[in-house]
Image (cartoon, rainbow, N blue to C red):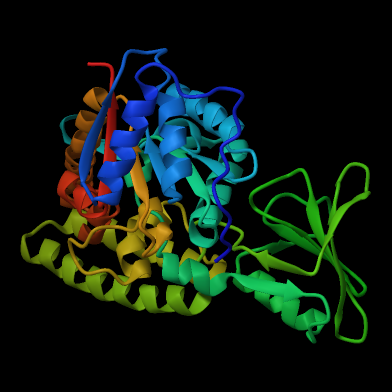
Length: 397
């Protein structure tokens, strides 16, 4: 865990009602007051007030907002206030998303369709890594913050580091990279890939496409680690030590996937028999074929379309147990939550679970998904509340 103090950089000083608001909020947090409210119309400097609070209490912070536009605005403002710290952006990584659904009346199955935004995916990976490894982290997030992510313990187990002077051979580094879901290539690097040229490994981290990491070995010892501009080929900086994060936010080890396959098949046998006992042979056959096809792909490639629907098995969660979210990546650190425009954001957070549940119950009922798919879901509001110890609500009303 890297610890750096939050350092607020601004040409302004708190004015008007801001000094008193900052003082009240900071004192409330130090007294472990769970809920506080910051009122103020748009343009009254609520973001600057919050930035001062963060600088004074020195705690990692999750800022939640109700739409991407506002998230982008707050991200830019907070990044300008804390240029020496980690300010990250965590929203849905889809430009377009049509969820999987089934309409019984017309017997219409709608397959999941989505266009992923790779720039946003890189920023999401950066946010996950910062929450996991840096104490001076601020994450500005949409309601995506309450949606399922990989088990942080499993994610952490795939993270490894390299240090100049360390004894390690090329084969072992390649094995670690493949285990962390990096894809080997002989062509141009893209985020989450690597290539090998003699005793030189070039690794494209998942959180940026602006640099790659070059690791040079000599006699099975790490001789040099550098950050390289992929276009110019020039060295930007060198490292004595560098962490190598998993290539994907949903990365899981092969051992974990193999264990998941077994429990998926166990659930499948039970559910197919239930359909057969009820005389629903079409549903039984559909569920059996679809699930076994997915299992074959997981065994062969480590992934399948809609693998998130098996997250309960992969995460080893119990039935009904809450999913892991970005909040779990802060670990046991006493992080602060800011809910911006809370009069809009809170109802949105509260409503996410019910809408998701209704759609998936239909898929389960007609044999398109196993019942465990219901646990690939956003947090319930009560579960969200359990994950926060101190929260500041900001509102214009």
